[in-house]
Image (tube, rainbow, N blue to C red; front, top):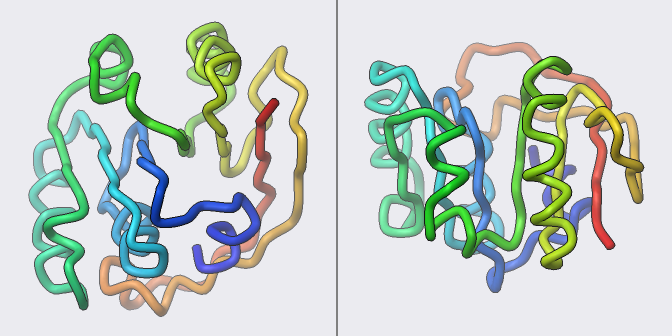
Amino acid sequence: IDRILPWSVINSDDIVCDLGFGNGAFLIRASMITGCQCIGVEINGDLVNAAVANAASAEGNVLRLVDFREGSFQQFMLSESFAKATVIFVHLVPDVLQKMAAQLQARLAAGVRVISQGYEIPGMESWKQGELAYDMHDCPANQGLADFQGRAYLYTL
């Protein structure tokens, strides 16, 4: 996660949105490292609760910088909160990315950066891509997990 933040030029002025945030690891680390505001949506209530607990146990002002919401990302993408995001992070499978590609393309046109971890977004051309090794041990949400290495794609105008 620490490598993807500077790679994608996330800073304290950004509002980072994670669609399907899982245990909140990306948003927690983004807020810890950059001081950015973060918002995310997750359909699984148990994961939302785990993310809030992970944020509460993190260093610094993380709990006041992150907003974890329970719900579908399809519905969330229609919200004012989503419209305010300057960076959108997704770690979703290709068929789901395909279904949301038009909405993500519209956000790109508005100047938003989109990061896809793992898969390219069908029909969109990435501005930057790279093989990034993620150090999972630095985030409380990932204690005990092995390091992850994978491809990430950055889309921007």
